[in-house]
Length: 167
Image 1 (cartoon, helix red, strand yellow):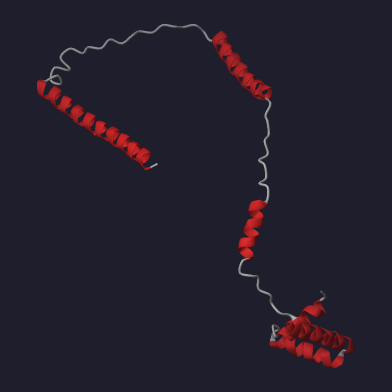
Image 2 (cartoon, helix red, strand yellow):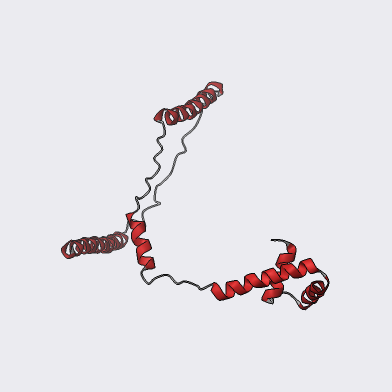
């Protein structure tokens, strides 16, 4: 579609601005070829308005389309197979690289293994911690935690049993 046709369609549809409408009206009065194009487009517009009826699809259109889609064969997933030799070759390369770096590091290291184990003096450090009250509190907290765990475990088992009974 040319620029003139676009301008005329906008003029016919009433979409052009006032300045453009005035310009087109002036051009229609002076240019005969432009006026012929305008008359042709007016005829096309009138034919479209009179003979064009919008058809609505039937009520069962969506259902019919969905049935056709269901009858179509589902596309098969593309199955690509990777050669295991490639995976093993890549893994072997990296394993060989790591082993060679480790061997190089050990070969070039200077063996200077002198270390002393620090001595710990733990005398009289834990005397206050092993009191009977501390041990009783520790056992009580563990018993409560065990009961909470046992409750959760039994609830899971009961939910599974209820689901099996519903099915």
